[in-house]
Image (tube, rainbow, N blue to C red; front, side, top):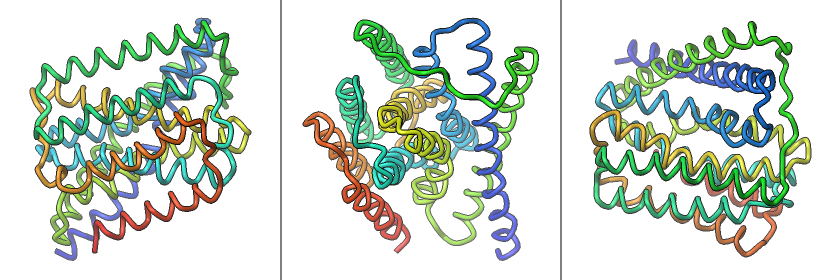
Length: 315
């Protein structure tokens, strides 16, 4: 057992590193390609950057489904949504980056509320049928279409995303492809290592998914949000968290259910963890809909709450 655990720890860490590097390469390469083919910056923000930071979640969930560990797949999404709200947004708030959410936030907050309600129903039912998975993907596409048209009508736009890649499409294409390779390789390592850790230390796969896997796949969102916050782009910081949570539920679980022919959800998630997701997401949604600022004290309380939740999982 000791030998197994010693091998699994480095696998998890290496998986984290590859997921981070792969996500960075994909986003930067895709942004460069979009710029060359004159895709509007707003569309880049809504699709390429948002989906790019969610690719690690998708890779890990599909790999977990292939391995038959649905608990890691579902736990990763539930835990990632909690981490996005409590840890990522809480940290951004502590830096003062969430005090001015900007336009369109009420629309995104409403979408998070609707997606969380769908997730609650699925967890209580105990399964996401493949047909419902298809409907979730169609709903996500409709949300993106509506958000894009509404933002254009409001006259809002985003600045061109910074990229360290030269403005050269023949370089951007292989960089993007290499990033995708790193993401999938990292996902395989993370799932293999996380599963081994669960077996070595007698920890349930659901807890590993809610903590280790969720934290690892939330690192890209944390990086993007902190960079946006330090640049004073509060709307990007808050919007990235909200958009990621919608994608995790409607997109990641939708793809997983469609791909696997139906996603089984363990009953233990209905007893505790889905209510943590509902409570944390509902708290932020209520504050944003009420147009209340998320200040530094609230952010510190959110990060403290996340650490307490992690402690509860293991104790």
